[in-house]
Structures are given as structure tokens and as C-alpha cells.
Length: 272
Length: 235
Image (cartoon, rainbow over all chains, first blue to last red; front, side):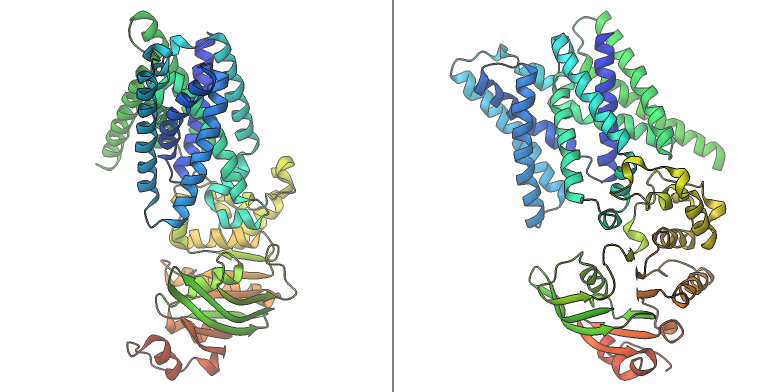
């Protein structure tokens, strides 16, 4: 039950923030954060000789936010598009993480230190302390997003009016970035570096196929997330050797494809 | 109302606006015309403080740029697939830093309904914004600006991609607004309607070609200076 609540709340918080970045047309940002978080995890191990989630969260979030500042500066001064810069950082993050692990291995640190839990995700490695941390932070971020939902809507639709109404665009962007980075780091242990972005985007994208009102959209996403989370945990508990992270993403993707097919067939029936 | 002196703006190395100076008293409709790439939208953004100028000054008198001006960018700058109804979009414009934490929809219902009725989109209030026609979208953007009770309305090509009757409807609303004490500054591209629409005109081609009352400055010589020889108008 604890595992279900942990993954459910984390997935729902990720889905809500995924929606924000979807409308900002920066869907890949979550992939950037999760890949840049990877060397941050190794750095946490180097500094504290531990992969305790609390320590990892602190070090990695700081590291990713520093890299985020460099990324933002580059976006302002470079001639390259946002997508290109994001791609540079995705490649850089993963390479740096792998390189740091290689260096550690050359200095006699075992590969069993637990890096693979963060690289590919391993829900069975979640301790109850980890679950409490994930549940508390996810709930806090969900409350924040709910309380500020109207402000965020204004920010997403029209940043000029948003700033004319007295709000600070930069501050809002920073708050959303910090929330996203924190959730990215927490989800590494659930879905891993490569799969985290799927949790951000696929449930929201699927819900977005059917509904264009925010309330309906998130109710659908909520149902989808609870169903897929339940199914993933059930499958991974009953078939040993199957990780919950990849099952989650594969199920989400299958539901997404079926939804596209359903929508296409319905459209065909209505309009011939 | 607006005093612009020697305003120059550069994008990287290219100068988009060169030494623009004019004095606009307000209380009328000012049109800004010029060929593509002449810096019309950049001028609007500079006077609003959304684009930093490299040289010169923009001074507002008797008006607060943050509180009294409503800016309506081109329709194409918005994501119309955004999950919002017509009503929500107008209502959300009333959320400020002072009231967002205790925002109560019912306190603003009368105000929002009244502006929706004024712009003939009250019947569409529950409709998703993607389901609107070009003219309805433009009226929605104007309603969202009007709900803020601005003293000055700045519009960037509001008649783009809308039919003639919608254009006439919207223009009549703007005329009514000016009659009631408002001021409009508008970028416009259709030269055929300039004489009918604007009290004052600013002709731009990176530098200022002419500024004054429309009757005085809308002539062949100024248009040739701005548009070159590719201009066919029966003036």
C-alpha cells in the first residue's frame, strides 16, 4: 500500500509539472534534468560515501540547479535553438555520470554501490524512509500547484500580461524549475535516468487527447495513473525479475497508443 | 501622454529602430504603419518596456505603464489549444499579486459577464478557446484587455486573419472606447482603411518617416519613402 501511495503521488505530481512544461513547449526539460541529475548522484556518493536519498536529494538538486543556470545563460546568448541546447545537456549529463562512475571503479569502488538503482530505477530498493520523503515532497508540490493553479495558468498563456499584473516571470520559472528538479531526483529511484521523462509526459499527453478542460484532464490523468501504478506493482510483485519502472512506462505508452487509436477510430466514425 | 526621444533598438548587430522621436498626446486612435520588418512590433514592445532600447528614452505622462496600459499581441502569439474556456481566460486577467491567494470568482462575475456581453461573446463563455473563429478570438483578447479598465490600449495587428465584418465590429468598439476617454495605439497593415480608422498616424521604416494627423501625413510621398515603389494606392 505504501509503495502504491508513493508511486501514485510521485507520478501525479510529475504529471502536473509535465503539463506545465508541455504548454511551455519545453517537454524535453525533464529529460535534461534527469540526465544531469545522474552525475549529481555520483557526486553525492563521492562527497558523503552514501547513497541515502536525503543526501542524494540535497547534493543532486544543488548540482542540477547550478547546471540549469549555465543552460539558461547559454539559451540567452547562443544562436542554437532550445532543443539543441537541451540535447547537448542530455548527452553531457549522461556522459559525465558514466565517466565519474568509471573513475570511481578505477579507484576500487564497487559497481554494487547502488548507482544502477538510480540509473535504471529500482522500486524494491525504496526504504520506508525514502517513501516518506517522496510522499511528503510530492504532496507539498501538489498542494503548491493547486493553490497557485490560476497564477500558473496565467503564466502559461500570456507571460506579458502575467508580468503586467505584477507577477515575476523569472521567479515563477525558478520555482517551477526547483519543483521539477526535486521531483526528477526523487523519481530516479523509481524510473531511472532514462525513463523519468516518460512519467512526466505520457500520462498528461494521454489525458490531453480526450479533454481540453483542466479539471477533466487531471481527473482522467489521476484515474490513469492509479490504474497503471496498481497494474505495474501487481505485475512486478507476481513476476520476479521485472522492474516496476520500465513496466510503468511500457503500460503508459500502450495506453497512450490505444488512446490515439481510439481517438482516430472515433474521428473516422463521425466524419467518415 | 507618450514622449519618445531618439529611440534606437538593435537585435544583435542589426539596427531595427533608428532615432525615433515623436510626441503623442492621447485621446485618439494612433495607427502605426510600415512595410514588413520596419520595426512596428519592436516599437510597441520598446514603448511598453518589453524590449530594452539601446539609446533614447520613452516617457509616459499621466499614465502608469504597469497599471493603465493593456497590450494585445498578435493572435498567432498565443497557444489556442491551451485548456481554458472563454470565461476563464477573461476572469484570470483579474488575478493580481494582491488578490491571487484569496481570489473569489463570484466577486468578479458581474464584471466579467459585462465585458463578455460588450464584446458579444457572452453566449460563448463556456466554449473552449480553440473552438472560436478568428474574429471571436480577437474579441476575446480585447475583452480580456478591457476587463482591466485600461486608459490606453496597445494592439499589434488586431485585424490579422479576420473577416471584414468582424473587423468593422471590433473597430466600432474601439471607436466607442476612445469616445469614452480611452486611447488606442495600433499597428496596422491594410493601407486601404488607414484614412477611415486613424486620427493620427506614424509611418515607419526602421526610422521615422512621418508622424502627425492622418490627413497630413498619409500621402504618396511619405508612402513611397516607407514602402518604396511597390505601392499602388489611389489617394
